[in-house]
View 1 (cartoon, one colour):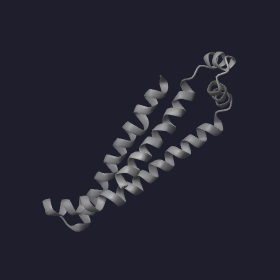
View 2 (cartoon, rainbow, N blue to C red):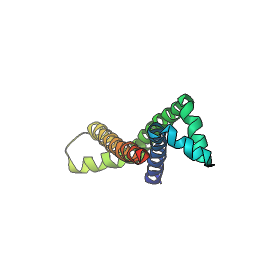
View 3 (cartoon, one colour):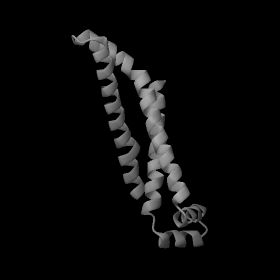
View 4 (cartoon, helix red, strand yellow):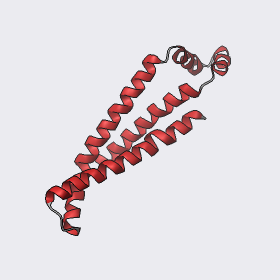
Length: 127
């Protein structure tokens, strides 16, 4: 369940990142032509393009909130089992295992979030 929640959060983060990049990469002239042909999505994009402040602020709040949630969920779900595993394989104290497992979980979740929640979606949003 926790893994599914993390995957869901990364996907939502990706949607935010992709929409931010799609707006930044959109060309107003092309949107204008599409809007004139009746494309409702182009009309909405033009409205966002003309006044992006609220949209971009909302996107940034969403991305930041999801990052915090990823850390909370990931640490709670994966740090204790990893600490237990470390205790069976390494001659370290419980405190050292806990700190090490938390650090490893945060690094792994950060890496996954950056790649699949930021970089890949932004690349797709540029297309």
